[in-house]
Image 1 (cartoon, helix red, strand yellow):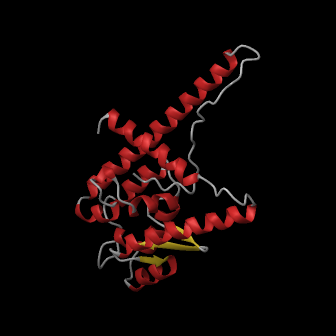
Image 2: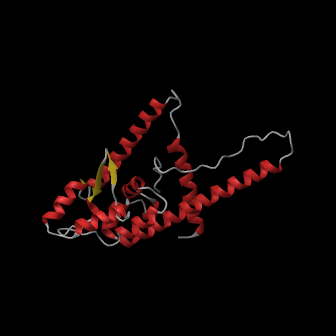
Image 3: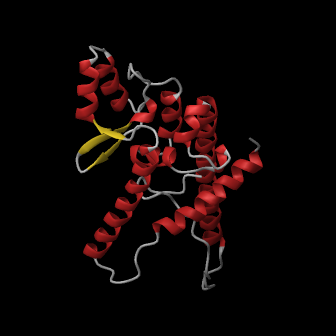
Length: 214
């Protein structure tokens, strides 16, 4: 992937981030914003649940541990360590850990090759919820396929897409930092009394709510 392609992805991420983070216009109260955030999270979870349902669905941590225990497998400990080390796709929903089953082989339920590498790439720039969302949403990095679907066909392609996504976000952060620095320098050098005018404020992503997984 070329630098220009990565720059294009970074620009799309900034645009989608702006649309996703827009708060409701009225009423501007803590209760209204909290309710809006819950609705957005519910909708995002439903999209993830639908995507993961195509490949085994979601199991709670307790259900998966029980299934692994019945197989007399050391994978239970490996799973726990993988979640803590952020090498396994998972989300926390209503205080419960939910694990997509696409990442486990059958019947051993061992973690498939390539999952840890992909999550490690994404984990540098996304939180656990966003990592799961990235796998569930179609992306141009995989010719319009969702990583959860592409992973069954070509795990290495998903790893490359995760790496490209990480690089694009790093580039996005650098561009935003450069823009902010240039704006600050302009403000310092502006003669006293001259109006600042309407300057573009660099958009910054937060750890939750970003759904531009392109």
